[in-house]
Length: 79
Image (cartoon, rainbow, N blue to C red; front, top):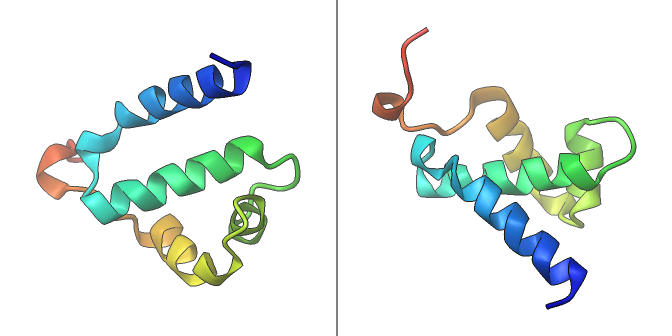
């Protein structure tokens, strides 16, 4: 197993621990956004994030996720 493959496997396992708190589409967007922020050395903005994962056409969807989220309300504790 290469270092990159091992790192990717560890990253996927780490992200999977948060899946319970999101809808399926919400978790996908969460994983995409968190991965983009992790690999982005610039500012952690939505624009920089979509460019980091080479998904500029998903800017609106990622901005919407960052602003409103898509969690499973019954799975998350009340504030």
